[in-house]
Length: 486
Image 1: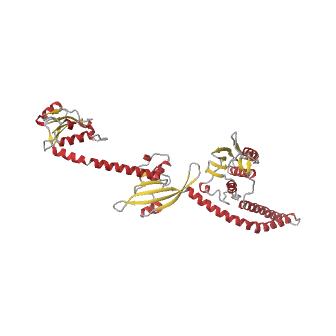
Image 2: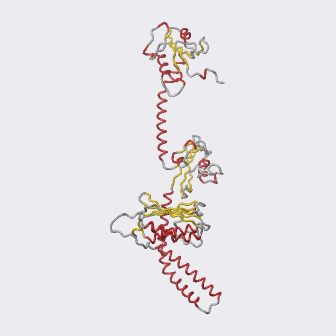
């Protein structure tokens, strides 16, 4: 149980003496400090032996002066401590509950507090250094996490915790695999089973590439580094995790690879046009002649029909390749976007209705005209609607909407289909990539090419089981005299 003394709000102190040591002791007791025991000390009286005149300058405050310790104790029976600067032995005063501190102990206290300014200066320097370091680390755009050897989070910078929407204090003392989904097995599985953990355990820098899907269903890529930090004993003391967002860099690398592939496709398509289509026309022509012949039996006629069907299918594929490889053929001008969308959706709504798909068109009262070719933009919208229909064989909903954001017009096609697998999101604009049995894989790449040519763009967001949202970004047509509306 806590006794009554420890519950006191202040300590009542008396001092015996009138010299330099008294002055030094008063400076210590009266100095203001943020917190600490001396903030609870109150000097209630000073004893000046031999009835000397008090040094008013030394006392600084209106403190009663007595000529003997007995007078002081008589006037202050609740005294806690008596500093007797004329004695050389500490102990207790012959008064219940009063501790006696002699001049040797007081000398030690004053010498101890002489070092206080140095300690305060060091504390200020340390605080400034820590503030500077925290500011620098927090401004670094990479995530930085400091761990102990067991994977407990000791510190992290602002970027690391701000991505999660939580506060820094929510992470202290937690295991990294509990706080971050990107490190599910770090420090938990055998070292050789986890690339980063294996490298750190062998006193090496570890690195790997991670990917994840953001709340909008888009892929993010990160380069992760793990650095071992040894303690003074040469053992693993800490682990520094650095996680860098390389999504933009990965996107540019993929874009460069696509450009190289497109160049190869362009060269290949010329060869295909001259070397494959001519024999194909001959095959289809002779097959049609045979089909019109009266000498074929039913089984042979069926086989010839298959030859013609496959020839036509191959011809369509060749046409798609050639159309994709050659420059976009179209007249760039002013397009009335509202009229284009309404007329296109009037046609597509009939097919959607047969498939039990509800179609909603949400257009604002005023839609800017856009720059482009009307027929190419119409074909792009039709391709998107067809993709949505194929993703909803059992019915669903398609919403076509238009918004104006900053200096661009956005046409959004949103469906409630099966969605796109995360591993496929970054491949949907690759030529010939398709998840359909009969797809050519040129639909979205062709739309992207059309929009790139007019200074627009295309963005895909998707979550499996929830649907896909594709946004076409179109440049508005400026009110320049002498232009004709398409």
